[in-house]
Image (tube, rainbow, N blue to C red; front, side, top):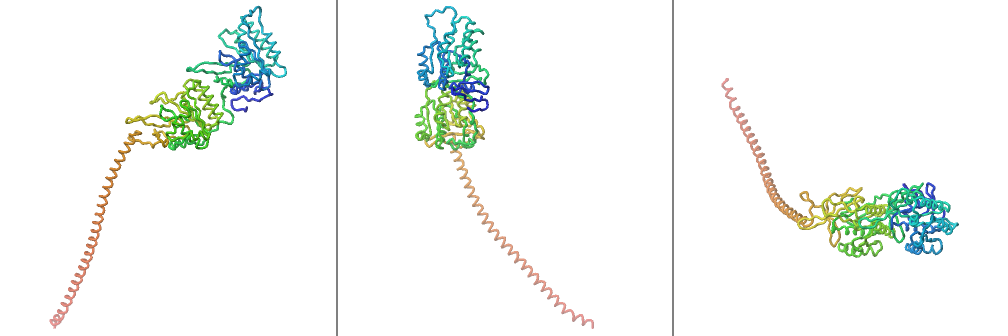
Length: 584
């Protein structure tokens, strides 16, 4: 394992499966990846580990699984049973996919029956010295040993004095130290005083694990907590686990090195208008939620996302809780989405989990297994509201989203709302608070019909539309209509069509009236232009007349001036001789 922030650096040592932490404690891998991550490598080697919990919590399975993994890595083991017969122990070992039966046949795992027969009457002081001697003979000196005391509380309860119980536990501790064996002790915790043997065992052990089994909303839950781990860093939170044919499985609780890079690449949803509303589509590796009431096309939009991913040549996985894959393929084909060809190509895997009654941790584990098997780049979970708002369900969904982010998987989830309208948009399991994008689908009832509306509630890192758009479904596909607002309201369906028709009629009427007025204006302009031309000619003629009149006036004046000059000259010629005669 590599070291990352918040982890204990683990270095494998020897061939026995032991691992060593930064603090110098040799550890044995349990084979339970999540637990080894929590504990920084596994159980303390050569020391005592106490596994506690109620009936059915998984104590015996944990010890068997750890023991088997240790043996597979080169050690040997002895399983001491205080409650089950050797045959029952062997059957339990063979139940899981560990191949433990072969290890028993080879003598690498020995089973010791430490039960007391009911016909034995105890007298005097009882001790486990003889039992430890028989274990010593069974343990090979050539390889490190693992010894499991399963249900030792069944034996210690026969000792009615706390001092005797303490003495036997100290004897067990000395035995483990003398053999350098890794000892796993399982016991049921019961309410008791401070000096009960359970408290003594927990004090004596270097590592104490607490397994718990409970029910939540009628479903079984299991979790594990490292209550104590001397001289070793370890996770202190309570983590869930499941029981499968591989035994106990715990999800890794911290991000793995090399993962978690933030992508700026946009991925298309398959609906161009939705991509535009989202600023170009979803970011790769993001998580998105389609929420809404039944029938608002959540599954259809999710299926369109899968189809678009496969069309881009990338593998995708669809998980369906409400319908089988065959039903999904048939239903979405009615709106032009062909998933059958994508399934046939191998790019798309559809997995149905209809009518599953498993707990949230088991459901998430199954989904995680499908992810590890198919390695998809895109994931659809329909609906994620199968997980309730119980704390265990919320944690399970959170782990699933974290897994997808670590693996750069773009995940889309659908969620059914508890209420059809109003402010009840908070989804079950509160997944809406975890997702990067939240698209809410709703019904708008107008004029006696129900229409689908789409709203982008949030889209992290994106300037997105805040309007309610109309979602349209038909046999040609999915589309989003342009937003049509009238008098401050968004209209959809028949109201929109009716309003558009009325507006078109009004527009046509206005255009007709405008054309009529335009024609009249043109005629008036033509008339004015004709009148203008006529008046221009008249003005020209008048000016010409004025010029001629002025010319005539000048000619008349010139003639008159000439006449007067002639008259003056004549008068002057006649009077001159007369003046001369009078002078004589």
